[in-house]
Length: 171
Image (cartoon, rainbow, N blue to C red):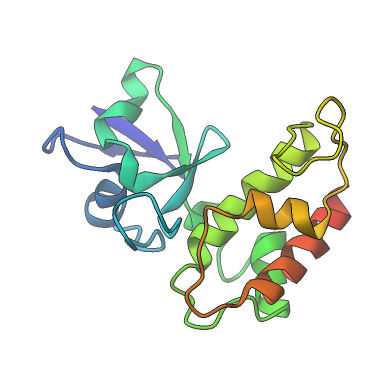
């Protein structure tokens, strides 16, 4: 079976019970995606599958077989690199939106999807108008949409500032 990650094809013939998280870290050598709780509660393992964010600890690698018309998986490494950071990666650095940095890859992947969801008009629980949420993201909207990603260091104000900067430019 073949799994596409960051535009590259990886062969997978391991245990069918292997999580996508473990496949990314062990088989692909992509250690940006972090194992936090391994129960889908912290968001450290957030990656993008076909542009939508998921907790990679809660899905099996075998479910993303490219040979079966599977998925395009993007990790934090696929969003940018040190020589060419994504807008969100650069904003996280600029706003010091990390302390220990453990949650940062999941936060950045989640924020990338958040901005795309807002552009597509997806409402959130706190959207004032569920029929027409618009592209404007209030601080409450950003907080709600990022609520699946925890930061033990408490860098939330800086994470919010980084997302606000990029979301404001995207709108």
